[in-house]
Length: 134
Image (tube, rainbow, N blue to C red; front, side, top):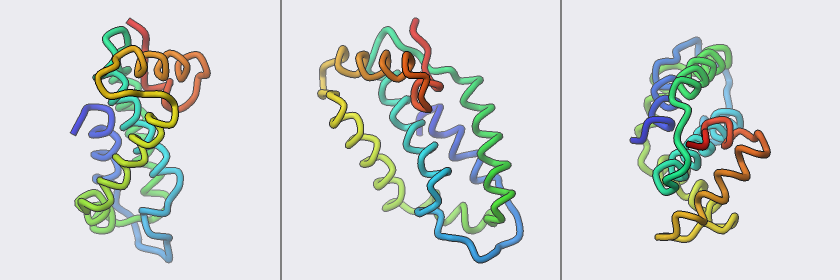
């Protein structure tokens, strides 16, 4: 697992709380959006030589995500099952890859990833918040 995604996933893994009538984690938009965005940012920083990850920021966001999951009432067991589910991990990764492809990323073309990363940083969106230009 790569640093940004691992930090966010680890934070949710540690979350515990009373189990309430909650939607399945795979449908919990806030958590899923952040996991997908972290995966996209991680792919960008690995493919683009002029962009790096904001690791300390990512850890801070991971703590926020942990608190969010706790406040929602997801149990550690529920979170473990979600994060250990290979199909869910594939879904998150596939969603990230789909986003990158739709935005012009091409395998073996570092500059295509750089362009997406630079735009995300300029737009100050969630993906860009995990990235910094070198």
